[in-house]
Amino acid sequence: MATYSNNSYAVKNVSTSGSTAISSIASGTVAVSSLILANTGASPITVSAYITRSSVNYYLVYVATVPVGGSLEVIQGNRVVLKTSDSLTVVAGTATSCDAFVSALTAT
Image 1 (cartoon, rainbow, N blue to C red):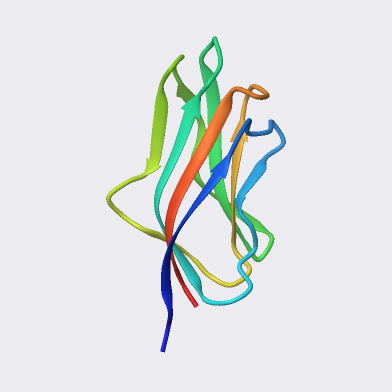
Image 2: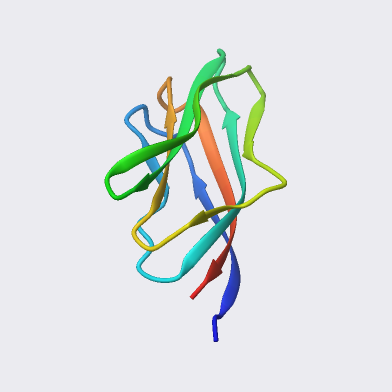
């Protein structure tokens, strides 16, 4: 029988080369219910988020603009399920100007 737990993941100062929000899952699944990207800088920024599965990147959002003081809720109202070996990565167009927060349900 599966065991379920609520989890949250945070990334401070998202990198321009990509910061892993959820690393490769060893077993089970993770149902991501919320992904929020916040602009912490003094200028508008661009952000992207993608899932890597079998070495292929699948974008959830690609180079979206987030205004100063604003945020972008990439996943809301639905769930994106990550399977074994999947990972979730976020990318900022400007260094140290974006924070990311993920809420998820993990089944093991």
